Length: 406
Image 1 (cartoon, rainbow, N blue to C red):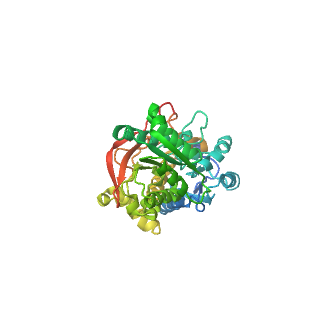
Image 2 (spheres, rainbow, N blue to C red):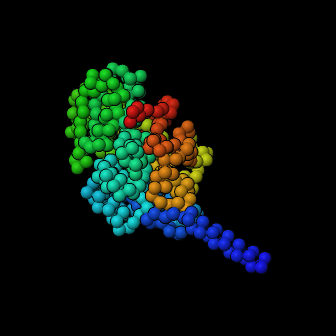
Image 3 (cartoon, one colour):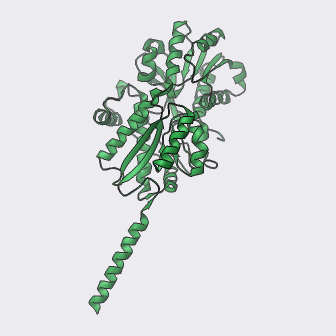
């Protein structure tokens, strides 16, 4: 009898243990014991195609993760579509990923106008729109858009940093602004104006918008020079940034040049514009500059180079976009690790909003990733740097753009 009781107790314990293990596994769409489907939308073609390097680098990093056993034993199935930086196409691709491919989440969809087009859809469907590749301030609004989170510093915070610099170093500046005529461009302009405060109306002498469908921004650069501006606030995506730098040099306009972070890539922007033409440009950084010779003995840089050599040999090592893709992919992997066996959409957002001082290899020293249920801005610090014709050089400490009340 004792033996039978022991067998019964053992069988019951095993059954309870098995059911407990099964209960611990909670899967949302796109997840199995072997796989996690992650969706992505990137402009591999069209006017913002320079950013296609980001999507390709992310894919290469996930190949590395999969080759090393995946995340908690599950391989990442990365499904990335081209939207050509066209919002209607973004909507089409998002619906395909969510309703046909049935991905767990959409990760790093790129662009402000494109993400805006799917913002309400993703939240209505309760699908994570996670670590979007845009710094618009609206991505940090968990109260109204729980399912959307940014990653990089916000455009307004960056604008505040440029304003601090100008008020300190060039208080009598005459500022000319070139900006993309959409939410992305307007966010950068608002950040600068808010940072300048009451002085904005006096200091800003010209604002020149351009449309993403324009072939060039040459006429805008001519207008800015004619305005008498001696500071150029260049709010452009890579193709137009390179055009603006080149045209300013051609017409002999040499202002203090503030170039938005999203276009400070040496390989994708400054080389096409001409390195001599780019000398003296100021921008902000939160990632290590892969062209900096001082990094050759840096442990994090060595890890990135090893990854590029083995998994992304065709990638551009002089481009900040490959560093960006590598680092944002690492951030998602950390979130997935924290999810454990609870890979539901709800828990993905819970873990994304619970990153504590995450230190990644290619973040600048002193900059870490932190989030909370009420703080959807993972990276909030940057450092001003200046291009010397060969590489970027730091010209000040790590600064915060302080998104007051945002």
